[in-house]
Length: 479
Image (cartoon, rainbow, N blue to C red):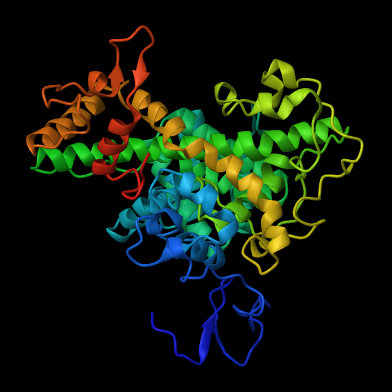
């Protein structure tokens, strides 16, 4: 969209404002140049044609349904701010893939299905059918009156719980929830439907953030349709690899959020004797908002930007004793609860650490405030956020991510065969990765793993080349 020279677009809510306005008429965000930091295209590494240009860009996701402010952060292809470029350049994955998620793909699939016909007429009808399937009930009336305990989630009436959560959502969320619950009822398992109803029932009993948590978890339980099979074997192979790689990436993003934000927050609050239960719901909203704004990263769950910022902690600003944070964040503990790591079970932290659960980039506020600070003009706050982002990004370096991705893919015979199709095509084109690659290897497992030495080694440069061809790794990445 072309913007008149006398106008500017708000980075927070995307409203187009007159240049004469110093702040957005809708949300109050400062005009670029008077409050919002903008990456300078004059930076040497961002010069058009620079060998490193693409390493510093973020966003470019597919968009879809959601809060316009959040969608702007993940869809706009933009240069990262200077403080965040070390984090961004260390991520080997193409930015548009980091800016997409399982739930965004599911939402797209559900909307496409509804537009082709067969959409349910009402949420009540869908909820009744879901309860009937989940517990084998014979009639709609029995579904409405049925109550039960759903272990680990909630007890009560699944039908009423689903209704209450549905009514609290925005219109676009209501439509997607109706489509998702209908999809699970017609195509999912009994366990899928019971879990979905259990999460909606729990949401009904708690705050709006828990309702949003339930909504995204129900959407995520739906399985996107597989890609259409092409007559070209290479095209089909790449599509299958990319589908599996995207699913893997979503799991890795969730694990990285746990390891570099949520679990350290839990551990910090345990160390200061704060039994705050808000990290996974409220704290996550603040962290997700900052990651979207600063790095353009989208997760399977999206933040409720107007939530209260609580369940957060400045865990990098106050040193834990005995190196427990370093123990938690070792690669072998990736994705684990802090309580599952023996060295972390009795955390201690410096006495100067604040004894509260609402202080991170600022004291209190909302997730939208943290996001605006992440891309705001205050370089002190951006520098404060920088080490958190660099720790998160470390999970997505080629050295850490690609061996894990490859080992996940080759657990499937179908995906191993797809990788072999890519390898044959590479060699058929007369291309070679290194001096030891004579073009004769046809098995991707032996191509990427060197088993000739006492200790098997992963050939990282070969993996980068292979996954660049597939479309997963940044083309600009060099080892």
